[in-house]
Length: 75
Image 1 (cartoon, rainbow, N blue to C red):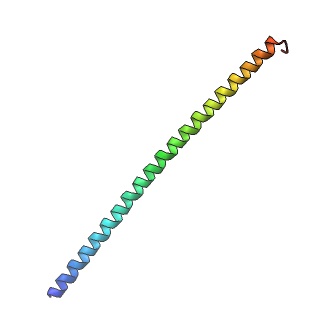
Image 2: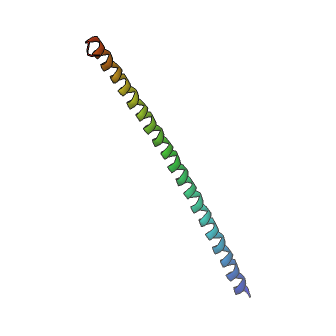
Image 3: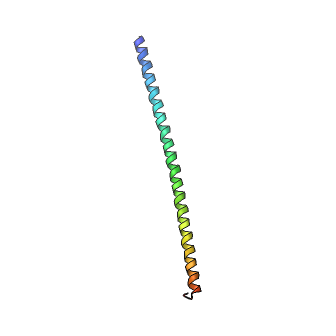
C-alpha cells in the first residue's frame, strides 16, 4: 500500500510540475506577444513620422521651386 501511496504522490507531483510548466510557457508567450506588439507599434510610429517628414520636405521643396519660378518669371 505504501507503494501505491508513493505512486499517487509521484503522479500528483508530475501533474503539478506539468501544470507549472504549461503556465510558465503561456506567460512567456504573453511576454513575447506584448513585446512584439510594442515593437510593431514603435515601427509604425517611425514609419508614420518618416512619411510625414518626407511629405513636409517635398511640400517645402515644391513651394521653394514655385517661388523661384515666379521670381524668375517662369510662372
